[in-house]
Length: 171
Image 1 (cartoon, helix red, strand yellow):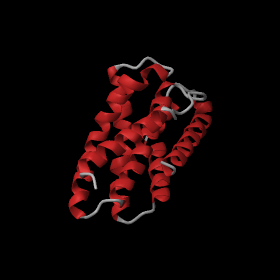
Image 2 (image 1 turned 90 degrees about the horizontal axis):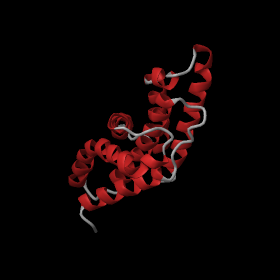
Image 3 (image 1 turned 180 degrees about the vertical axis):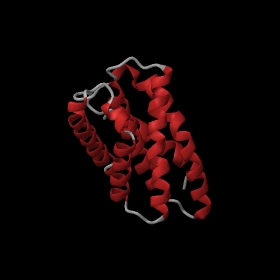
Image 4 (image 1 turned 60 degrees about the horizontal axis):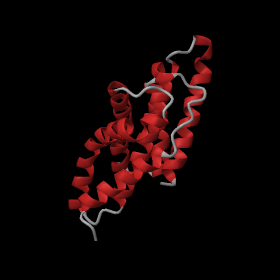
């Protein structure tokens, strides 16, 4: 069996590649909402990757390096956005926008850990994490929309999160 560090690195690389070819559609979003949707997609796939690693850990000693690696997810996503995905996004990728996507992508992983400790199934954890992102970052989803269009913007974001959840379950 491979060392845990190699398994973590391989799984995270696969997760990044998975999102690279399954970016959310920019239709129905303004820039802040789309950045949040992209970060949510990376975050939910990251949750699925960590869930897989934790379930396949051979013992408790392997769990600690996996939990420690969660902190590197933000940096991995930031670099992936800047160097591998920038040409596929409908907005100019700056250092700040890629860091924002990385920060958003790390939020689901931090929200997932307490759920994992309570033995929450992956599908339920993804649902709860997605709902928390939508409710905690409403102003980002609504960014650029008038107050009459906020409901449609939120509906579009929740649809993107549902799609991300499906990708994460099948990761």
